[in-house]
Length: 366
Ligand SMILES: *Cc1c(COP(=O)(O)O)cnc(C)c1O
Image 1 (cartoon, rainbow, N blue to C red):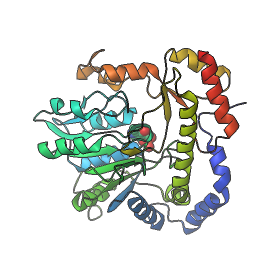
Image 2: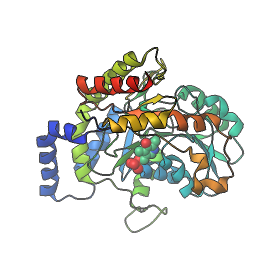
Image 3: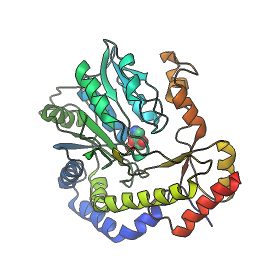
């Protein structure tokens, strides 16, 4: 048997006719920039995320970057974030000229540890950027409380957690703004790059819309130095086809996670901890195991796809040398990087495939 980490063809097979029709409609219209599909998707995402406004953008990375730019964050500023995330989180902070300040993670959830945030705040701090990793939201109540007390913006990197909830509230709806990615491997994936920023702040929404189009308002009169951060209507049309399936797909991922949980219970394999406050959408199912690299090779030999999210904590990346961090500074993040392994969790996995993955992991340790 062969079990890839993700099988997008299996998903495409279910919706092919609808996707092709939606793409054809855009092509026939020849509205190739902006237009009704982008606006329709923005409304649908705002509704799905319990937010007033949504702005379609060119990628999840650009969603983060344009939000920072629209909040006026730049050189001399600091943004507090987690070191255990995809590079784009901290990379976007650095690209504005601001300094990413890393705060260690809660080893149970892999998300930023709110108890450590306050000690990292300085007079230069402008924002906190929690990441809702693997589909589970960060512990937002204490984060919002700290932010409010210090007058800081909160930018939720919700790239992996669209429609995930914390105490019944949707990812992206709690902070100043929420950033989503439609990278094909996310729960709601486009056929290419795409992203979205959501917010309840009307003034921020207006700035995001202007910033997305070179900061021009009116046309050819530039209020800000923005950029081309636009979402393609073809991608919006495809996402509109997929959005109605999202809840069902995420429920399937949760069911797959529950199966693995039951198989690994009482074994050496540590399964993902989901807080009782949260409903995860399981963008990834990451176990923590001893001898991780040998397990991974064993699974590769058995034709099971796995991935390490993420093998090197961001504070130790070569490009961030100038920030002055060293090994041992953020021990929980460094430890997680050595122990995590993502198993296949996508909705179309069959019972046989799930059993084969679980059997294989357990047989490695027996
Ligand atoms: C995927 C991802 C991004 C970036 O999204 P792109 O659409 O690939 O640019 C940012 N942050 C996190 C946590 C992600 O997983």
